[in-house]
Length: 189
Image (cartoon, rainbow, N blue to C red; front, side, top):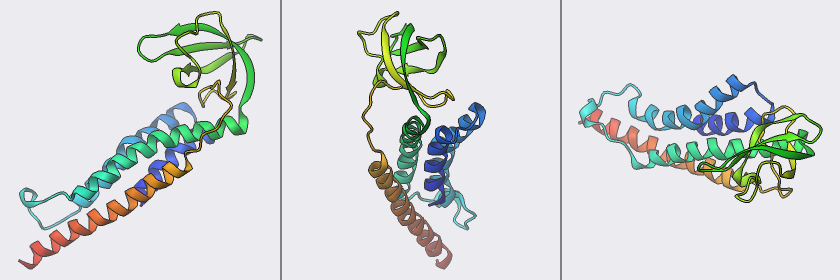
């Protein structure tokens, strides 16, 4: 439960607070990689008397790993949404550079001359038909943490994040109980 909650909390907090870039990067690394891996490796490698060659991994422990990575990714997106809702501002922006190698990214500058950071992604309004010099109306974060967006609608990540958290906790608990049962069987035999 600690790993799942930590992964979700760190991912969401980064853009909302807003944390400085290096701290946010470390938090995202912890949320997407370290904590999900810990949910798999801690039950497996906690000091046990079972020899390493006879240790088994409960398949249930794969679910918290996958759910933890998803919570890190979607928790960051939910945090970006919350940050834009709280401190975002609408502005007219000009596309200064369009990178269409793979996924589109547009570098923007406000019409009044101020820079907008980070770049606008394809899913948030940098479509294939957008070219350099085009004007777009975007909502951006003056702190430069949350990515800008062209859309006004707000999708909710609450249900999905709650389901991922519940799946991680339930399956992680079930897998840890199975690991402990195998440990006790080895001690008894």
